[in-house]
Amino acid sequence: MPAHAIFGITMGFYFGLARFYPRQQHTLKLKALFIPMLLHGIYDFILFTGIAWLTIVFVGFVVYLYISGLKRIKYLSSQSIYNTDYKLLNQKFSKPE
Picture 1 (spheres, rainbow, N blue to C red):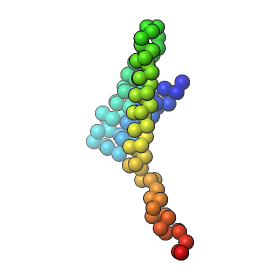
Picture 2: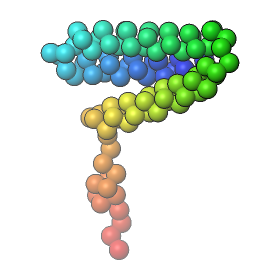
Picture 3: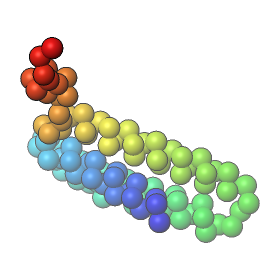
Picture 4: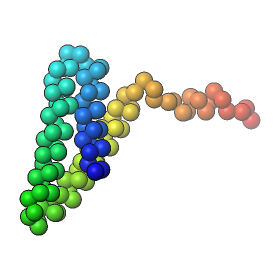
């Protein structure tokens, strides 16, 4: 199920933050556990109720999940120590003209 990937991203986001913010580590680890559980519960509730108009809500919820997941990935990627400075690499290794 594609939503499980988003729940994993949400969990990893908060675990990743907990690694680098030791003072807030306990709170962030709790968020890593409970926020994906809450999102999964909402996801299942919308799917299993069988109410037709909730299909529209479901589509909106899935779009929200993907957008928020991509924002979390982008935020943590921009903070990564492994972020590559391509402009510097191009300057250093480009051939002189």
